[in-house]
Picture (spheres, rainbow, N blue to C red):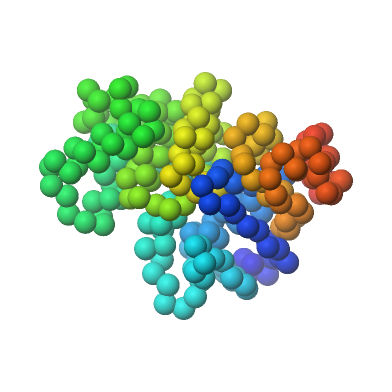
Length: 242
């Protein structure tokens, strides 16, 4: 709840490890609110109240005494629009990890190279690491954001419509990255793009009006959904709560 507005209610959602978990549903259905529950980003919103439990690796992240800073290291987040800092490409990649521990010059070099390679950006930027990250294209900036997230070694990566501001070629590059990353990370993707969910998701959660209508393997929800509402949304892109 935010004040008196009951945004999510009466719901249970489960996400699978080392998979791309897609959250789909019409605008205003609560997708991003659910995503932000998973690293307590909603705590920053005035009037936020949570009733229930949210567990990551079996641990209730809203339990008394939980370290929110540590949680956000374990559960990283990439936003809808690339959020690069007014610093160099290298400094953007190092931003989070150098707040965790002191790094010598060699470690910094290794971390920048390792994580830019992980997001398939190293070859494009290796000769301009001191250039402002804002000088890159939007698609490249989003990959820098992913590299910055990976550098802190999270267990889970939350992605809130990470390709919606990108051109189709850059969007497909990010999709390919997500598929490669699931070998080492658990990814939870909010997307309004049903075709994108069909291409990359392994597990789907379909939401409407603040509730989970259906969840399960992607193939089940697309090919043999248990609810007519799910079928209409995934096959006809229509939902009665629109």
